[in-house]
Length: 168
Image 1 (cartoon, rainbow, N blue to C red):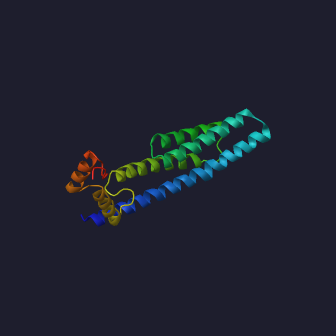
Image 2: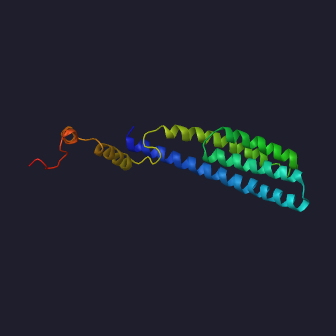
Image 3: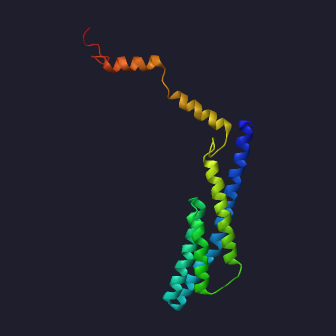
């Protein structure tokens, strides 16, 4: 397969990964951010330590969801639905759809993380642009010195008078 076609497919794949990451992050922000706000607000109204515990669990679910999305590690998407189940068992079921959606988001997050890790190992990551890759190769070639330049620098370094004209 042509390198440009491969870069094009990888570029589309990384855009899909980023789109899924954004959808999952927005879900966690909207649902568990709102739940955290409501739990903290009800904690201040009722002055209850139990509601503070519920708010901490809700915030932990939000944090686990975000860490799963942005750190690309699979332990956080596994922890997020468990924390969501704990929150629902403590606070009581508010909506029956939230925990299954959290489980679905976690599964999608794990699938997208696997694809993202595969893309990290491909040539040209993260841009998958042929011109950028050629420029990267050219920049690495500039750092290589010619043999004549290397020998001249060795002679100049080991020269006794270091380029000064004192003995004239």
